[in-house]
Length: 40
Image (cartoon, rainbow, N blue to C red; front, side):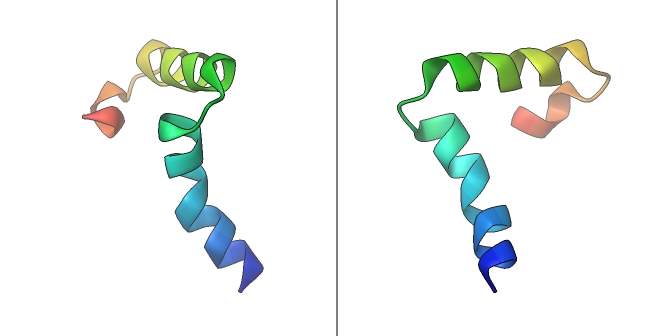
């Protein structure tokens, strides 16, 4: 149950949370990969 909660809420914490360096790293990694459509 805790794992499911973590999987569901972690994208929102990364994208909308106060951690600018984490957000920048995650978005940069997605854009550098071959799957940039995941954030659109």
